[in-house]
Each structure stands twice: as C-alpha cells, then as structure tokens.
Length: 170
Image 1 (tube, helix red, strand yellow):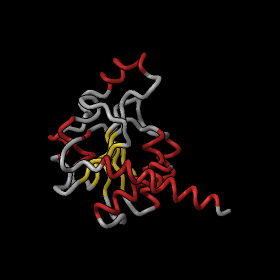
Image 2: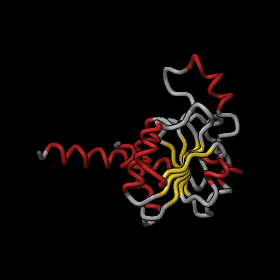
Image 3: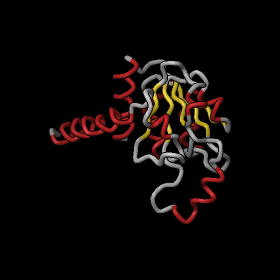
Image 4: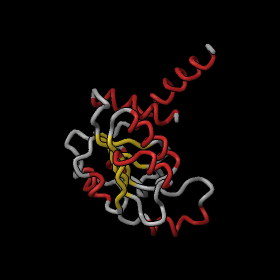
C-alpha cells in the first residue's frame, strides 16, 4: 500500500490531478497491481491491465473494483491513450526456477518505445523498482524522458514518513 500511495503522489505531482487519469498496467496481476488498482479507483481513476493468460489479478479484487478496471491480453489496447504506463518485474525474487517459463509467457509484454508511443503524448512511465532492463522494460523507456521512476522512488520515502507519523500520533 505504501507503494500505491507513492504512485498516486507521483501521478498528482506530474499530471496535476488524479480524477479521470487513465492508468495502463502491463504485466503480472500481482500484489503491487492490486494495491495500485485499489488506490487508483478510490481516487477516481480508471485502470486497464494487460496480462498474459494465467497471470490475471485476483478475481475477487477485480470484482470489487467493478468496471473501473479492465483486463485485456493486448498490451497495445491497455496502453492506448493512457496517461500513465506502469509495469513491474516479470520474474520476482524467489522465482528464478520459473524464469524461462515466465519470460515466454510475457513475450510481447515489454514496455518499449513502440508501446509507449501508443499512450498519450504526455504519458509518464512508472515502475516500483528494481527494474530489469531488457525484460519488462526497455532501457530507452526506463531511462527516457517519460520515466518518473526516480521521483516515484523518492515519494516512497515521503509517503512512508507520513504514514509512520500518522500512526505514531495514535
């Protein structure tokens, strides 16, 4: 949840709003996606996720979010016109034994310049880091002008401090 708060803070800093923002998530429907989608919908945003078969978000999470979240198998359809494009590692720590299978399943899901070109011209790119250049994201995107990953990482610090201060006042 702290990552999701940092993401919303970054989006608002960069786009000047949350309400009505279109987010495209490309990749695994994992816990990071769940938190971001839940926070985004609460903030009045719409989310499209492109995930390969077998890597869908939890059906209960999708059901709770209703029509504010759309699932597709087509990364270009998810990214089309999006204000924000987000991905996460395709192979997490501890999944090294299934790396080849996961990379095969995620073939065609890398966020590269061609995919980013499908988004809004002012779209930003986000990733919770650490990123695997050449796997889920091309270096030209991660290190490019649309990337806000370092601001996003900095905002994780600020949101963590804010949450801790709030909790310690109790």
